[in-house]
Length: 253
Image 1 (cartoon, rainbow, N blue to C red):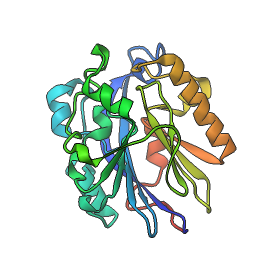
Image 2 (cartoon, rainbow, N blue to C red):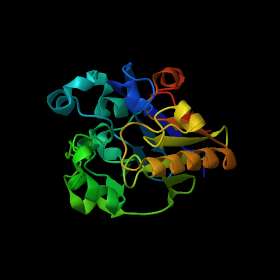
Image 3 (cartoon, rainbow, N blue to C red):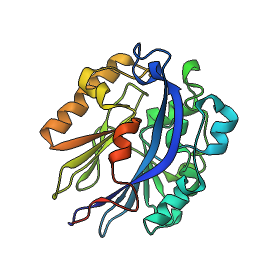
Image 4 (cartoon, rainbow, N blue to C red):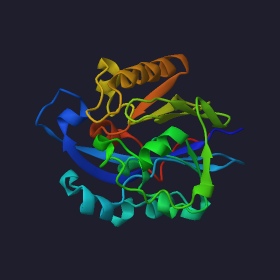
């Protein structure tokens, strides 16, 4: 099978306090961070999307303090168009978890099957009190017939594997895309906001279980080392500015 093409889709940016990026660190330091999705085009296979960003109207209405910035060109339909696709072309959606900034574009992907851990769905629908704002956008829950429940390490297709990395939420997933030509790509999702999180084992300030978060950071480092993968954290601006963005892509050789 040919290498998949991996596109990084720009979904705009949000603002949080630095103490939420690195728990008990960077207090009072406002941080603007990127929100992005990953599109994986597999020759002869499904079109896969990992995370779908935030919905601007929802954030302006419910979480305006996160100061959302998203142009019309940074919506899921516009980003897919850059890659030569339409929303209905997406076959599989994987949300690393169901927080509002990772599910906002699901509503466009009406033909897609959603791979989900049942525990993640349960927490999204009946969250703990402190998870309420995280799970505030339930627009993803439009058609329960689309769900496929999974657990553990899960291979979507050869070379594209989901890895359980709980802690930030009860059943968070990261995604490994293995490439023959060039380093493989390990998309951490919110299991690691930044490279510093992985290197120093500092978890994000918003979490369900900080001890599990540490275990997941160690798992990401282990998978990166043993499977020759570069880690792509979820919410760090400086590396994001360096990465290729759609319509450019990684792999595909």
